Image (tube, rainbow, N blue to C red; front, side, top):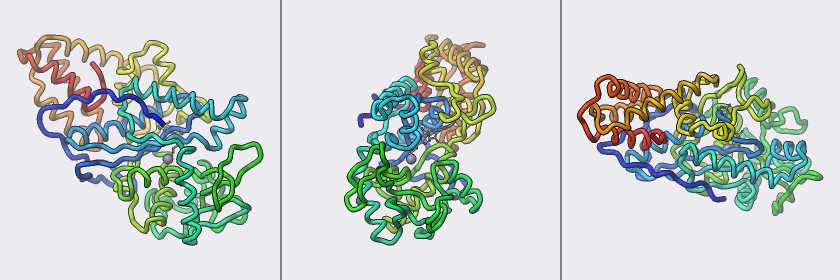
Length: 409
Ligand code: 5CA
Ligand code: ZN
């Protein structure tokens, strides 16, 4: 699939910082040392509804990761998927009597528009589950040949017991895993499985549902975790730097994906850091397509909200925090954008050299965007109070805020 256009990332004077980030698997901060090409896989949307602020907050976190790396003059090899065939998409298409392919295309197109408006850098490879099927089938075949997968009434399951490292992404106990598996697409109660947690790799064709030729697997469609693994291994290979997504993906999705990849390759770990963004809530509950308590990026844009203000609303929260969206969050962001724009629109101002370093330090320290915003706030306040004589400063601030946080002033 095609991704979306990249906004330009201005080069900044001075030195970028190496990124230190929280890794769910080790439970602590790791300083990544990616070499000249940093590799990141971020789980993409299931396109059955429009992008909401929760999605946008998660993609904002991984956009910051890239911007910190780009500032160190590294290249970034970024891969993202689109889960363009899966149960929730088929169920929504059925409910609304629309073609599932058309629904997926329409919502993916809207996602691209939202990401472009928010100045999120595009992935180098943007891959749909459907187009990944020819690469998925041989992986499932290999897992079966290795004895790590088994058949149950035509469906093929992965045996979690085949990975000695299973559990080392999320570190949950068995009861929590079972609960989350049931909540998030698994079927722990299906009789006949070797272990209740075993996830599906290949689902045999069901009447009335789309299916593809799976070679020795028979007709069917891929399971969710193997989709991301096939795409990540194909485009990044093993041992990539960051596997990213919202915290609701730590288990089962990233746990299972890591196990698939580790059994397939015999290497460990799949990713150097498993990075998870907090959940955005509305009216006290996690924003979710299934619950319908949503604020859509596209709706805010239609209401005339500047995408830069939406971006500032996201940046005002630490990416690992769970937070609640309210009208005040947006009001504060709009006011901040106004203050910053007024401050950079003057011909001179207080020196911004220290500010650039403060933004760099904050973002390299586990993507601490709120601290970066506070530093810009202080510069803007100084500009408003007493101004300054540095004619380069307003431009430096505009470029830094754009390059490091994707906010166009
Ligand atoms: N297609 C799969 C990943 S392979 C999927 O989870 N799609 S999704 O559309 O449900 O979510 C896309 C991304 O947004 C995921 O990283 C998910 O963790 C994140 N996300 C979903 N809801 C929220 C929320 N309320 N707050 C923050 N992030 C969220
Ligand atoms: Zn995924």
